[in-house]
Length: 397
Image 1 (cartoon, helix red, strand yellow):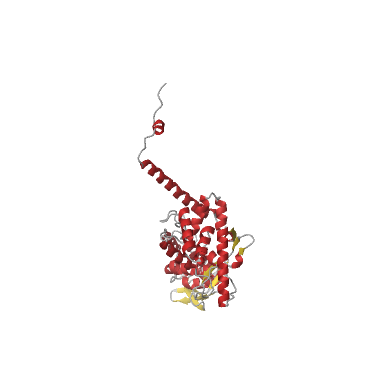
Image 2: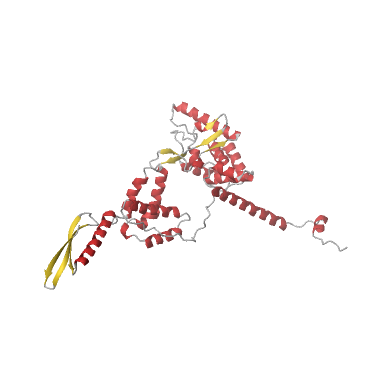
């Protein structure tokens, strides 16, 4: 509370203010004096302004802290309710895309103009840049909720209408029917049971690699030949693994296995049982695709590493495991399966994702059809009375 006193000098009578204010850095209370006011009303007006500013300092207790220090508080808060894989991805995003821009700056010094420039910059660096910007926004929102700052500098910023990148999601390369059949035949005749089971399952079910590697023996129903997909595998930096829930509810699904895939998986399960007996090991979770030395599931990168070698070995266009998922979708479309059914089989949360694949497949089919037409037109013309009749104008009656 401010107090006021009149004092005299050689130049006349004046008013002073005695007031206790909060240091913005140490948050300590300090008594201070303001002098030189010719009227009491003027002194009271200034005192009121000082009290309002002091109230803001109390509320915005950490406005002078750096963005990085507030981010660490924010990180502790969100890490309590997120999956380990999500925390890991966010940490990478912050380290690479956010902290280099904002990390060393004090919250109070970051302006709306800084944030708008950041959005513009990110729009030129990544096609899907908005999730990164939202993560940066979330730190400022956290600071507002905790009264570290009054408002977020991201408020009223805008996303650029046009960016360097196209809006459509990139679709991986995929194989056609002939390439897929050749690959499966080559695996069955030349590779071990594990490889055949792994890549046949991926190609004919469209599973994600994390979903495949998380499969356990209990996920196969012998009565219906249905495969339950309800989890995904994640490896931590310390080489320990976790079984996590899928990212979306639509990823939880049941798939019916064809006879060949079902029996191949059951043969692999029998092989794993023999190994467990041989080494007298009874793991808590009986994964289908295991390391024979530890009976743990393979790392997520393993499937792509093996697939790259197999593509080279059999002279096939190199694709990723996600490309096999795309290949499965393209084969389903070619077989006449409805788009909504494909969406359900692949566990897509949004029909737009399925439609992107469908559009890509049909576009390539149109391009190939055009090539066939041009090749046909470029062939030497054969003399035929039928052809001549087709292009001869009818005689006038």
